View (cartoon, one colour):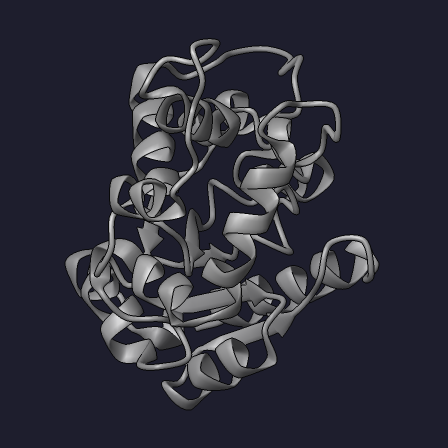
Length: 228
């Protein structure tokens, strides 16, 4: 029987923001203008439009209105955004747990996210498949571990807006239904929407919840799925 574990990104596999190297460094010359310019983006509808693919990261950067002096090339914010996406720190214990069941189920990142993340993830995943010990705790190292990505910026809908539109095409392409799928997500509404379609969902948040809960749910779900 084919099975898949969908795992959310922000709040589950990582908590790093976009442009972390600038936003986390108060001494960076662009720290204040970037933080101030991004605040209304993430507080309003532009963030959702960006996540649905209605806006590109190039349009978002242009709309920030940040003037760069001669210390920075014109595409600095563009390049740093993608570089910081690749350097996002990941939840290694959870990924290692998921690796243990990868022979039994596909591992797919399912995220309400932006085009910059999806572009970076796919580039990193296609670049190489690391072997042996993974020495860094970043997306660049761990993206090849995952089997695929579903991003709202590609499917033009958020998970809790229409779970059937978000997950359905991927499931159909791989000969599965929601009954063959488990979602690990920190959003109560995302989990509820997934269950309404017949899937199994675990609400779990990085840093707040015990990893043993994930292990127990995976064990029960895989054990139930293997029964005739």
